Amino acid sequence: YDHGLMATQWLRTKGNSIEGGTSEIQLNIIAKRILGLGKE
Image 1: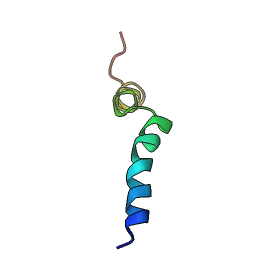
Image 2 (image 1 turned 180 degrees about the horizontal axis):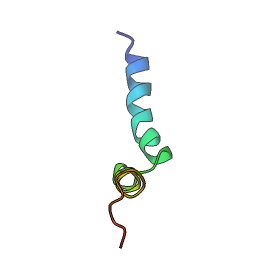
Image 3 (image 1 turned 45 degrees about the vertical axis):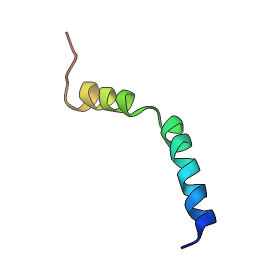
């Protein structure tokens, strides 16, 4: 296994999370838009 590739992928994981928004924000969007939760 290419250790350079493995290191690059590991380093990108945090950036990918930040770029896509936090998991909590994404779950909130799903809850509000798709499931209709959080509406008053």
